[in-house]
Image 1 (cartoon, rainbow, N blue to C red):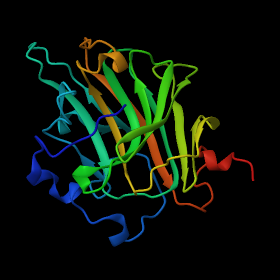
Image 2: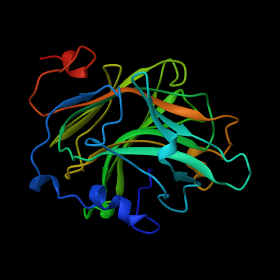
Image 3: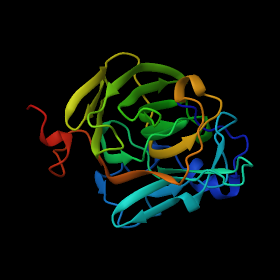
Image 4: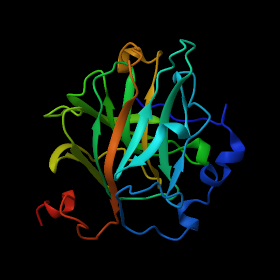
Length: 260
């Protein structure tokens, strides 16, 4: 489960360029890339700021919770010290949309906190004028020893699973990869195949997202909300997308290690 935005409550003037961009078919086809976050490139990334995705979310996206430091993208989460519930969370999304290919990121989370979600995923939906399609890696930080994998197709959850992480996500970096083909999606952790789906797959080009957010509603899934004692971060070392049919771009890519 991974609730996503509706138009309700969005700060539209700031969002218009990113949310209502032309569909991928009307744009130039994107090129393969690897982003190492020496800075946050505004031509590639849109930073969420000033809204929530719905009542399930008890924090507000804030550009002040996003930073690039020494080649690491940090998606921060700040609990409100006043006790008024004004928590601040973080999300970035690509300007471009991607259909099929290999999506990869090297990430780690902070210490265990119940009620928080640290995610690397692709998404498109009604806020972009498209059906809700999605492909996920989601770390529910109450238990950093596993990662949830999942898809949504036209708004319906499909192909879900839970994958063990050894060591846990807060103890070391892991490379999270998925290859999306027209008839198959395969998820990998550190180059090892951990999950596969071949039926009822997403069909719409999607944006790449990272997010770090909280809930006090979805407790059965994410755990009871616990305000962290200090700011916590989802850290991203790099992210890449490799177009279908292209060879691996760099040694850490899962494409360099798949059998011919």
